[in-house]
Length: 196
Ligand SMILES: N[C@@H](CCC(=O)N[C@@H](CS)C(=O)NCC(=O)O)C(=O)O
Image (cartoon, rainbow, N blue to C red; front, side):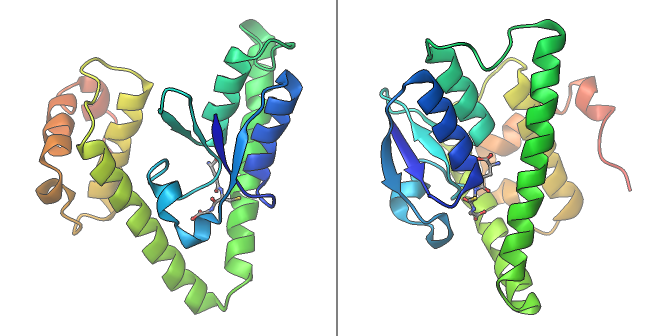
């Protein structure tokens, strides 16, 4: 398995620690995500490390997913308790740690450039990351039945409409537009539409 790797990334560190715990060897590809190299973008349109490419070619973005995957195939003591209070305690701690990492990495990014430059670069970079991810998802076969990925995607598309209504994502992504329209008929989405 191939891991897009940066020695400075705390998210990559988490993945590397889980792999070490289980004795899983990963082929590290040193990657600077801020340069958006094509070899990263084919595996993660968000242009973030870590990204793990499985032996069957499927790529997993996002350290929580990667850690859980590695734990699922690992043979050492499990890091994700299966059920009950131990599971929620472990996941709670992991979520708080991830939250600290997310805001600390953001803080670091904003503090190494002049404020206005950092702001402009950040907005542009995030906009392109979303555009690339929408383009990738447009090519995929999306699930027909509800799962947590569907819920996440409907909420992400709804947020684009809510906050960035001028970006006409539907015009460029007819399959996603049809998916969103069909899913939006589900009352769980109608009843939770963003307000404000
Ligand atoms: N939620 C992601 C966050 C990964 C992340 O933000 N990685 C940073 C490096 S520490 C990155 O790739 N930044 C590039 C960018 O945000 O454009 C995860 O848990 O893997």
